[in-house]
View (tube, rainbow, N blue to C red):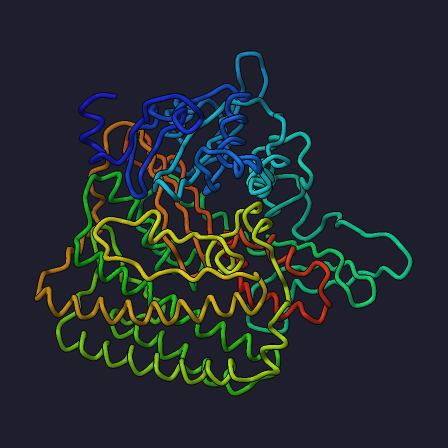
Length: 551
């Protein structure tokens, strides 16, 4: 690695010295960029061993680092020639690449997170149109392999669940039409729910296999609102890129926008304004407060406890209105931009925000206390929809759902972005049931409200530093083909964006992994052995995004 390469990334990537799988990969810090040719391209056997050692089930019993799967995706053709050819495809057309012997050739690229060390591991391998599935050894890859199969027709042989994911494959089945897993036996019956639901929500289909009232298996079929967002992002950044990512998952606007801005800043080698980073952090916590408050009210509503439902429904609106005080949008749209934030906070607004945060938090505490003090509510939450820690870890769950099952994962501590103060301490549950997921939300409300108060005090102490409000004109990207990964701890969990640029500084590939993509299977596991009447309660305790999955 040359001194020039090291300086271009401000020390954000490196190749560790020594031997072992952890040192076989490109090691990258969150929010930094590296040359694309720094990614090691291994033979498949070595790649599978690398993945299994760092992120497989047996890695839990070794002394080496234990990693999580952040992203795993396919690219058509060898890594570097593919990036060159994509420069001629600004629309992001998906084309099959053919090797010299006539077989389809693809690159598989994995991004793993080592939370203890605060680094990301990247490696790749080249395969034909078939390869031995990695899912049996690393269950967290099962959706990623299905996605690659659907997008490019690559067959992971031995995959246990190779079905449509978003129904986007040309010539494939229409959305929702597929064979569902069936349990056979006397008195076993099937219950279908959706895709149209009795609420103002998007579409998703749930297929239950039941013995009496007990759910033996739940299969979730999504893809009804697949928008092809990643294909729209290829060839950017352009005028529509930021608005597109603000709506990747509407209630996760700040998290997705921050991840995008971080990628742009990494490729441009421009650090964001310190004050702008604080404004982003404030906006992210307000987004977290609004959604957790709404979810606690909805959980109360699912068990018929209307007092907390009514209060929290109104208080969620108060948190959203607090965001609107900053930028005019209740969801924070238009607030974040590459380089910092588009709106500053003057002293009068900071004082108003402090009063608003303190008053709304006080009311939330009162509303939630009503629920905690109700024995009937506690009895309905306790022991329902359990996801054991081992299952949560195996499936790669993220966010409050993972922490409620006992996993210690919070990107604000393990992979912090530059210029941010110490983050709130995370909640770490024990039982992995609905009660633990509700307690995780409440604990985050307490910590986030205190964090917002400390941030606002800091704005008063900092004086009137001007926020860097970057114009729309695209900043200069790194010369040469590069890759960057941005992780943001959204209110549902880990938001992961991976960008690859071509020599012209455009996105040759843009990959978005919403936390719901990781967690839908967790909901299916939570229903096993439960009464079918517990489904609404379990579903709301996860509150996952249809559009965040479908993109």
